[in-house]
Amino acid sequence: MYIIKLKNYHPFHGFSAIRRIGNAETMTGLFTVCLDKYFVIYNDFMQTISVESGEPINVIQQQASQILDEMGHNLKLGAIRLFALSLSKIFKRLYQKVFVNQEGIQRLARAIQEYPVVLLPSHRSYVDFLLISYIMFTYDLAIPVIAAGEDLGRMKFVGPFLRLSGAFFIRRTFHGDKLYWAVFSEYVKTMLRNGYAPLEFFIEGQRSRTGKTIHPRLGLLNAVAEPFFRGEVYDTYLVPISISYEKILEESFHVQELLGAQKSKESTSGLIKARKILKDNFGNIHIYFGQPISMRSMASSVINRSQYNLLNRHSLQRPSAEVQKFISDMAYKIELHQIANMVLSPGDLIATILLQHLPMMNYNLLVEKILFLRKLTEDFGGCIDWPESKSIDEVLHSSIFLHSNIMAIVDRNLVLLEHNVTETLTEDLATKQALTFLTGACYRNKMLNIFIRPALVLLAFKTAKSLQKDDIQRSFCFLRNLLSKEYILLHDYEEQDFEEGCSLLAKFNVISGTSYDAFMNENNNVAQFLYGMINPVLEGYQLACTFIKQNMAENFTDKQFIFEARSYVLRQIVTGATRCYDALSSDFLRNTLASFVHLGIVKNNKTSSGAYFSADVNAVTQAIATLEVSSRKLPASRL
Image (tube, rainbow, N blue to C red; front, side, top):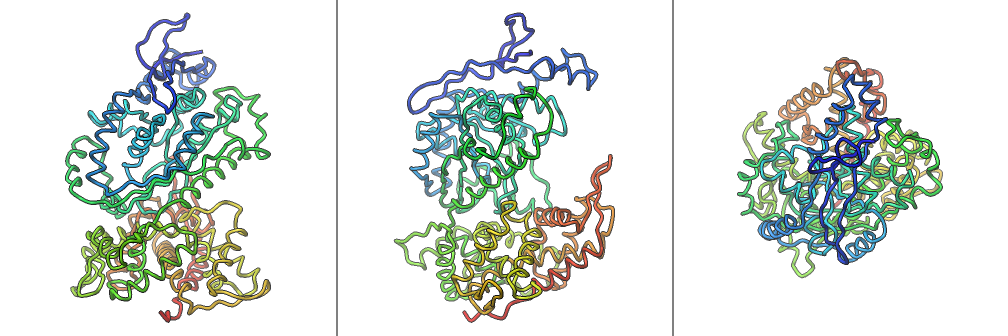
């Protein structure tokens, strides 16, 4: 076997080199733990890599050591203290209040004492992983070891400080690098087996720039699950954490990236230049530590762990279909827990209402609509941080002021900036309008998962061949599959989602009827609102389909599609053919392409030079017809 130590090479029991995974002290609420374990990669695996690459085994060993040097954390309590002191000052400047659920902290403290713990926060901002470490320090809990992108590790001064604070740095993609995967997965598994500190990573893999939860990345979760599957730990606790921002620190950068701007590389100079944001107010943060999820309980009667007894420790064999499905289901359930515990702010409600009444709306109508939406959101299970001690005027004015970069009150009307103009619409002006619209959409999108199931049922009534339940359910399943890349929906839960949507609509008299046929009340205020929430997505998918049919029938790349489809939509906006600014978003266009591939509307042809796409013209035409029916406007609301 080949044993690696994190610092200072020296001989050890006849092996050529060793390296410690860490010699860091971490404070818990009860005791200090000192890790003194070794990182092991077996020679048979090294030999396999050597044979496949043609490199001598000593070169492979050196490469493994170099990977670990670049990756490993070096957690030091002194750095953590300095880190916490600095963050305390910064957070007090940026945020009004940070709320944490105390019962969640108490559950986490108990879990850390029992089994290895993996913290899984939602990811909307770079602040996320700083925030969790700060809270763990404040509550005297073990500081987590955090998976971060290697670009952060390269930042001068900042990278080494983050490493001392518990960050380890990994590549965004491994590109089939077997050695890198072996070192990375063994590093993660060693930390779990020894359990000296919680492990933290973002299951979404990157920050969401749209306010929607991104579909999970499964690589790290696979590595986390393996020690349990192999019986190396009795259980592992997965803790979903929901972080809700009243205003996101990087919102302007996110929207610019959605509109095609190059992502700025993380750098120390960029961080220094960004210090001007310390003068701004970003409202409140809510952090909800969810119920720890026992991997053992989830796997009980689902996974046969005996299959792992016959596998080599470093086998590169893909997990079985049974295991892959389990990991995927577990990841989606974790994300649904994150979504369920998100806290909405009045600003989210204001953005949602305003985007349905562009370019402006009367202030009195806003008040009426906000009261309606607040009650509806709470009735649908959403949680809103509403200051009960303030009048509704105070709440609305303070929230509008917080988001004054995108909205303002002008002559008793609430206006979305850049949209209330009389000049001729040009591509430059439309792009400015898209910046404010997509910023508002980031807050509107936080509410989508609350309403998506009843909204899909509402659309199913419109597109079904008849109002018999079976036809409506078939239409629901098609729409659910079509939009499955936009929202977090559990696989094989179509029937449960359909029944939940029907139940909520029936509660508000949107639908009624028997199990054989049904009736939809399209004039219902709830129906009008739900349709306003889902219609931009349908219109955007319809635009994407039309663009593919007219311009890109075959042999196009995903980058070509995103660039050219955005240009097409922008031209349509300028001519007045559409007002669907959502369809200018790179993430939205990427989701539409993935959805079309998933449904067979577009084929993904993988070649040695990359992936190329081609459209099934008949399927595209059929999808356009379905989307046209879905996107027809309902009768005007009575409100």
